[in-house]
Length: 444
Ligand code: 3BY
Ligand code: FES
Ligand code: FE
Image 1 (tube, rainbow, N blue to C red):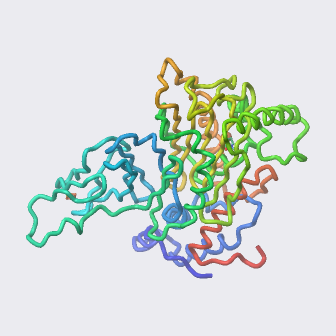
Image 2: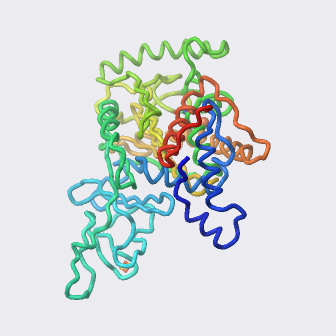
Image 3: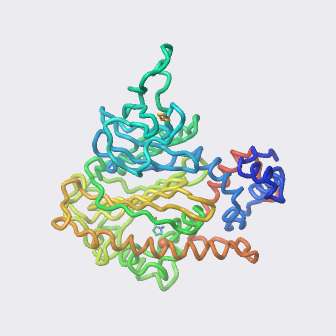
């Protein structure tokens, strides 16, 4: 095996004499764990608990992959910005004067101070709070006070970060050589999402939760609905708990729900066709740098939206839709996001790791830009189901974190209807192997 570069954290700990294990030993332990991952099973404990493994997740995954950062509704006007911290990196997403979305490193070119310290806001120019170097939203240095005669401001533009906007979803990549398959993903998901017209939506509500769990436990939890029946009474008013099952594997107790699902799919396909919507699933969750899945699926109850009775949460439908009964267009993108596009609103979910056992989950509800709160939508009615579901998931994830932290934890098998969890973990291990130059052990 090729040993990966040692992390700074391990080196520092070693120098300080605080670690009994050398960085070479950690690297070897990590490389073996990556090579030996048992397919179809949850990961070994250190992947969820070891700070050295966590550093490698940041380097191998979060600093190399395309990361969903925000939707265009979060930066509607020129000068609007969102900042996103990924590990020690911080990025500014800003809409420039030509309405284009730009991404810059949030680091001043003078002596490196962090430029924007708020999570979001609006600026004319980006002004450093230290010595007031001033940058345009495009990243050009406009003012730097008195400087030496040979000072050339053109040499001190903000360092840019690669950004790709797909149907209003903003992805960024911190790597110089970003995976180029984002173009393929964007081209294939855009016709599914574009009819929901994200550029004509606004943020109705945004919720940040810090989950006390490793980021992968939060992702794994999202990639299955095995826990939904017992864990999500509000969600399962509309979300079919048959999610992930093949037709011939559905347990008897779920057959009534399955029948309702088939009937709802009939109506959905008629409505989707009339509204020019694609419904064919695309599923390429692993085996590529930017794994993704997109599919339009029916909803239970009134079939319109994620409310307890399934009725629309917002009266102003998105795009040019003639009915709210359009199911949920579900998009999953590795490693950090999932989305539900409905007839009346959109919910985006993204996470960033904060530490080995803490994860920030951001949920954003988008409605038509002309929808008025209190008239067209009621915020508690619109947000209740996913707000409650997120709370329930956070409890499940911390419970998982406790368990995998025990010396008694051993990886257990994923059920067939948890295949998307396996796909996520398979993708993750592919990224680690690519980063570490590691081959799978012949024995597997
Ligand atoms: O967000 C999803 O895709 C769903 C919600 C519940 C479980 N998960 C598969
Ligand atoms: Fe930004 Fe000095 S560090 S102006
Ligand atoms: Fe859940």
